[in-house]
Structure formats: C-alpha cells, structure tokens
Figure (spheres, rainbow, N blue to C red):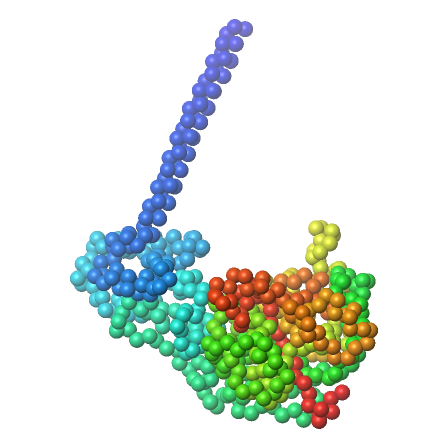
Length: 527
C-alpha cells in the first residue's frame, strides 16, 4: 500500500514537472514569436521609408527630382512617399507585401551585382519602363479629387472621359502624368485627343446632331440634343385623374401620404429613364464654367424661355460616378439646382419646355394607371425586410426584382435601366435605382391643405425638395408608388471639403438623380 502511494505521488510530481517545463517552453516560444513578429514589422516599416528606398536607388537625380515634383513641392504641405506610388495600396495587404518583396529583392540584387554607370538612365525614364513600376490603383487611391486647383477645362474633360472609359482606353494615369512623381523640366504634358460625347470640339462633327426633333403629334419621340451625340426617348403620358397618396390600410403607409385625394394632371411627355451620364456629360461639356449663377436666378428662369447663357457645373470633388460606370447608368450626386439648370440648358438647346416633374405628375406616371402599392402585383409585406418574421424567413424577390432595383438586388450600386422591365406607361426605374427630384417643395401636410379635388398641384413653399421613388439601397417598403421623401441639403453636403460648399454636387448622397418631363404644345391636341 505504501509503495503504491509513493509510486502515485512520484508519478504526479513527474507530470507536474513535465507540464511546468512545457509551459515554460511555450512561454519562451510565444515571446520569441512575438519578438520576431515585432521585429519583422519594424523592419518592414523601415524599408517603407523614403530613406531606405534611397539606399538602393543610385540614380543621381532621383531624390532631387522627387523633391521638386508636385508630390513634394506643393502648397498643401502633403508629401507623397516612394511606396505610395511604387507599390499597390496597403488595403490590399497580400498584393502590397508581395510586390514589396519582389521589388526589394530585385533592387538589392542590382545594387550588389551591377554598376550604375552602365545604366541607360534616359531609357529608364521613358513611359514604357515607368509603367512597370507605377500601379494605376495607387494613383487612384491618392487622387480621389480628379480636379486640382487651376486645372483647365480641357483637363477636366480629359479626366472625366478617362474615368468613364478607363478599361477601353487601356491607359494608366502615368501615361499623361509622367512628370508627376519626378520633375522633368523638358517633359511636355500629354493630352487626350479625339474625345467624343463629353467634349464636342474634338468629336467628329459628322456624329453630332444638328437639329432637334419637331413634335407634330402627341406620341412618343426620340429627342436629340443639337451639338452633342446625346439622345433619349420621351414617352407620351395621357392626362387623367387618379387617387394620389395611400390610406392606413396600405402596408408601411406613412402620415405624409394622406389624406388620399383626387388629382387631375394634364398630358405631358416624360423621359423613359432617368437622365444618364452620357446626357449629363454632354451638358457639362457644353456649359463648362467656373462661374456660379445664383440659385434664385436659375429657379426664376424656369418660367422664362428666353434665357441667354447657361452657367454649367463646376468640377465635382472625387469620382462622380463612384467608379460604377457611366454611359446609360443614371447620373447621380448632382443637386436640385444642378438638375434645374440641366433642364434650362436642354430647353434652350431644343426649343422645347423641359423641366422637372411635379410630385403629382411623378406619382401619376409611376402608377401607370394602377392604384395598388406598386404598378405590379404584390404585397409590400412580402417584399420588405422589415418585420418579426424576417428574422426567420427571407423576403420574396421574384416579381419585384423584374421591375425595381432596390436594396435586395442592387449589389449596392446603381444599375443600367435595361436591367428592369417598364411600367404600363413604358417608363423604367420609376421605382428604385435612384431617387428622383420633383419640382415641388416638401410639406408633410401638403395633401391635407390642398383639398379633395385638385388639378396640376405644385407646392412652392418649404425649405427642402420632394424626392420620389427610393433608390438602390431602399427597402421594398420605401419604393411604393405613394412613398414620399425629401432632400436633406445640409446633411448631404456635410463632408464636402470645399469652401464655400458646392451648389452643384452633393458629397454625402449617391442614390439621387432625376428625369425630365416636356410640356406639349397646345397645337398638337394632347389628351
């Protein structure tokens, strides 16, 4: 018995000793591992400094030319370091560090085995060699603002065209800005030529429209804007009376959608889709200006068809299309003032009366002759992500996705209008994709104050503007035909770095755009 106790105690002590030893070894290993990680990190940080880059780079002018370049010698006081240009951005960790390792090994090997006197420095400064060491994504990472102070109108146009057509052009930023990182007094800044659409001066005159379309009957027509390559389809919307708003029986009904009233609208033409980037850039290129027309003048001109000069937008801050692409996608981020100015320009170019739709016209057109929550069959509760049961069951998307770009199918960005089917009037994207400006000021009690039967109503008092339709981030509850919303002007400009803040572009809202309507001439007999 005693021997067994002794043996058990010996065995227990042996195990404790073993685990104490193992714990000690693990602790030492962890400390060594942490030390290696810290040392590796600090080494990595050091070899990302400008000083470490200069160790291997024996080009006699590399440091001096870098310090003279706009990346260092600028009024902002911001210095662009070597790795910011010559390595992929750090937000792509693997790509950044693998490229760093490859370049580092190559530089060290060249430093140890080659004589810099044998290098042809002139050829290494040529574009063909430089593009190998300047990732384009790094240029775009730094230059969120495409339009630096003092840029010419031609420069603005070229930047916009490049942003819209980067893949097709197969060019890098350095293709035009070879002297940006290392100053070269003999370098001639490259220019992009043959830019169609945006800049009419360089487009083939044979491709530009010379005449606008004459309307002789109340039917759909294709508008073409003289002096540009832009055209778009207008749909004839017959006049009629409908019940505007919703009752509390409609799912997700809100108080500002009531009371329901009978509204009569006169016939009008409405654009099949929201104003596209192709159309908006035609406007931008045609009116490019640094001047600022006071907003009150623009709104006063809405009733004046004899407007002489139209002042166009100043450059946007950053990428106006958010990198999603232009072309037929809806133009976004412009202010209500900019949308009104576009309508004035379009009216002047075509000789017709183009404007933003009234809120009543918008809802009448969106419904397409229906009185249901959507212009297609379906219950908002089935499509919405709101509600207790959505914790267990996904919302239905099968029918709504055929007609609406919204939060559940948008991939968090705008989409081209051909991705959805039209409503009964032939209009696309009336619901979803981007919110659309209306001509009315917003008032929550506007319906109650107007009476039960009204014709062509327009609210002119208020501080914010009505927006309708919801956008690509919206829940199905907010893309109902009756759903109302309004601009949040100050909040949408909150992070605009410019002083004074832009009157043309919003910095904090992406899903906002507009479509135009045209007033028919009384002589065509619209009904």
